[in-house]
Length: 169
Image (cartoon, rainbow, N blue to C red; front, side, top):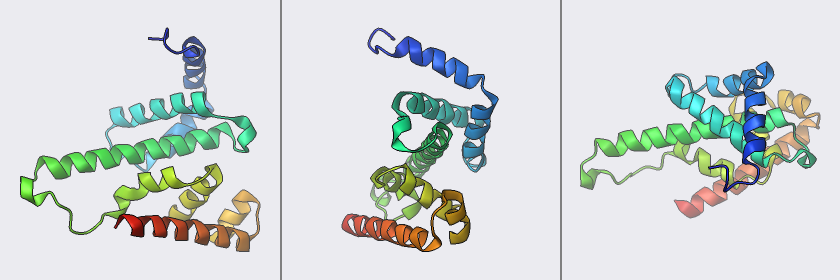
C-alpha cells in the first residue's frame, strides 16, 4: 500500500508518534466527546484516526493555526460526517420508496457542507466557538481580537452560508 504514496512510511512513523503523545490523544478525545452518545466507540476511534492521518498529511504550519487546532477541527468534522452518515442510513433503511422524500430541510445535516464551504481555519473555529455557546466576549478573548470584529466576521460568515443554503433550498 505505501508503494503508491511517497510519504507513506514517514506518515506511519508520525502516526505512531502521535498516538503515543498524550496531549494529542487528549485533543482528539475532547473533540470527539460531544459525539459519544451518538456514535459508538469504534466509530469514534475511526474518526479520530482518519482526522489524525489527514492532519499529518495536510497541515501547513505557515497558514497560521496550530497543529492541535487543525486536528481538533478535523476530528469534529469527521464525527459530524459519521453522524450524518448514520442518520441517512437510519432514515432510508426504514423507508418505503415513496416516503423517502424530505419535506423539510434538516439543517443539522448540512453542517458538514457548511464546514466545507468555510474559507479557512479561522472561519471554522469562529463558527465552532459560536455553536458551542461561547459568548462574543469569550470568542474575542480566545482569538485576541476585538468583540466588534468577531461579531462582524460571524455575521458575514452566516450571511454567506444563509445565501448558499437558500440557493440549495
